[in-house]
Amino acid sequence: MSEYQAFVVELSGNVAHVQINRPEKINAMNAAFWTEIIDIFQWIDETDAVRAVVLSGAGKHFSSGIDLMMLASIANDFGKDVGRNARLLRRKILELQASFNAVDTCRKPVLAAIQGYCIGGAIDLISACDMRYAAEDAQFSIKEIDIGMAADVGTLQRLPRIIGDGMLRELAYTGRQFGAEEARSIGLVNRVFADQQSLLAGVMDLAQQIAAKSPIAVTGTKAMISYMRDHTVNDGLEYVATWNSAMLQSNDLRVAIAAHMSKQKPEFVD
Image (cartoon, rainbow, N blue to C red; front, side):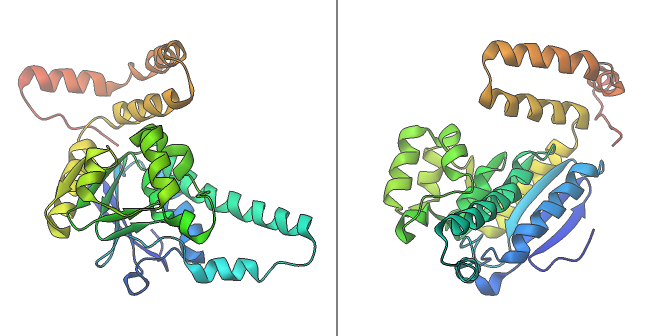
């Protein structure tokens, strides 16, 4: 693991804890954030010892979204030619999208632990995670509408599949702030914890439970669920049949069955 400017990454057992580490800036997403998150999730994807990921924010808040100073620096690169400005902006937006695509396409489950502010680009980030959990003080907002733009890094594409089309439209059109209990009621978060300490402990425990399962089975399950976002039921059934024709030959299946029959806890290799 490398040293990062915007993150701290720790490996505990088979769980990687990826923490946004700019608490003095409310964990705003600066230039280093967008490049480092790709490197981090590439390492996670390639490291067999990592079986699950917890994503959190240091300090009182998860993240206030994209650093406005970074947006201002992009605007400083504009020239007089509208077409070339558009080309520059499109390239930059695609680069930012790639950062959260790295989270979404990671083969390991990613669990977000959210406290305090989760605003703007932070919603894009948690939308790319597998599951989301919140402390009671969490505050959410799809804030882009209030700065005169449409969210463009994944919220509008991923969130309808999580909270439904109508609710996504309400939140995206109004930009209104909502709390942890409403987030739970609409399905944005799975569970609400009393405070940040219990949140992180609870999410780490869930991640450890996942990490104790067969990594072959977990990877396959995530791949099948992700595949179904863009395919029919029949497509999905065909794909899982092909996938399992290989994966069911893994020794993990025999280990799991033997452990179940002997009422022992199975131990799976990386």
